[in-house]
Image 1 (tube, rainbow, N blue to C red):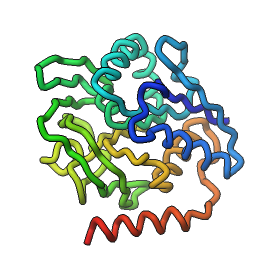
Image 2 (image 1 turned 120 degrees about the vertical axis):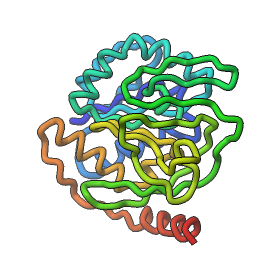
Image 3 (image 1 turned 90 degrees about the vertical axis):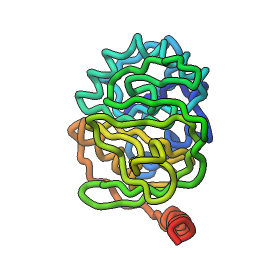
Image 4 (image 1 turned 90 degrees about the horizontal axis):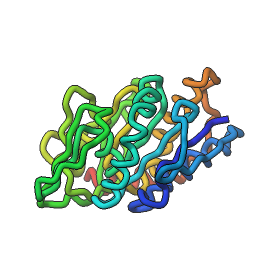
Length: 240
């Protein structure tokens, strides 16, 4: 059985982000993999080391302030679990919380968890639109699609981006990077939600979780003709 931790599902759910958890769970179930979802809200106890997949969605500055205070109490446990290979997907505001800090336009600094080497600063221009990102999955270059809507501009330090922007703004609209990756931690600005649009990435996250548990990580193929067709339509539209 795989245990899924959905952090703050009621507060961090911009643009249907909970659909990422739904896609992850459903693609497990279609293969006969048992899944148990733990919805963790403010103050709820959780042992991250016992989890297999953790999802952190997006929210406004107000929600990020609330999350930052609660997550600070969980920082050491989350850091230890990430170092041990916990599979994490953090989107937009959730992504920003894993870095060093978020600085608002007024100069107020919202401390991050400092788990990953990056920082975010608010910009006056919102970066909105469909995105195409090229990333690497098991040595193969894969193009994923999504939707971004953020004013935060993220700058990476000594950490790898999730991928390279082909269409859209990505982390900051300047350096061509999108998201961040460290071990099994995946961060991105892509809503949509991301995983239902990109089953190859979803399956990769499932395989990583199985491998961490010492279970067979090779997944039975699913009928993804509909998903592939939708992706191809978006790629043709955006890369023309």
